[in-house]
Length: 267
Image 1 (cartoon, rainbow, N blue to C red):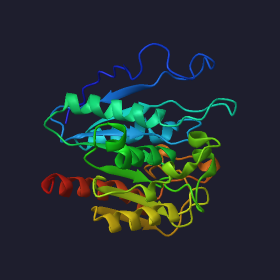
Image 2: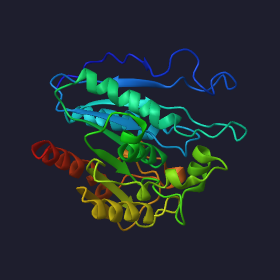
Image 3: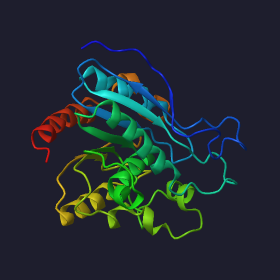
Image 4: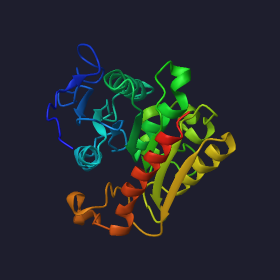
């Protein structure tokens, strides 16, 4: 499979986006494609970072893994709340993700287009999955979520929810309460010992998807810290105890198998 190395950056907001005027270092919301020749489908990747920063370990390495497997990929660099004094983000990130997904759907009209996210990026991807109709955004064909932030309740990652909702009622961002039969199928994984985003986030999502009759595949690993990304040597971060784990790294191959099943059973 030959890579097409035309990493053009696609702006997702005309002119100066919110937060860029009072924060010069704030990245303009954009989409960076990693296309392949003869793609099987497309995946839009949302790196995590608590809606406060964007993890490079959950961006390009993941995109390259998908392209190596024959899937066109793109990383969405969405607006974040870098400074506590900035207003909460609200629906801005999910609207930007919707724009990014629509761009990929237009480029690959005959193929499935999915969203993929890690931690807070998983919350963003799942937000599009549950709120697409309400917000008038395109529906992803599936969701791939790694150790996702899901709930705004007891097991919330408070920083992520605070950066979205501020002092407003966070209920809209508690995604396990927003799942419907229109929510797309999901593949997600978590480590049981995650100290930052408790595994209950994925368990709550599984329960909600089951109740709504939405197909999903969930993998739980007995040990591991937060933020493992691909769990391969390429994304090692030993100072934070994020080291390669062949068992956990198996999530990616399982995800590819799930994608093949999803393609053959697409409604």
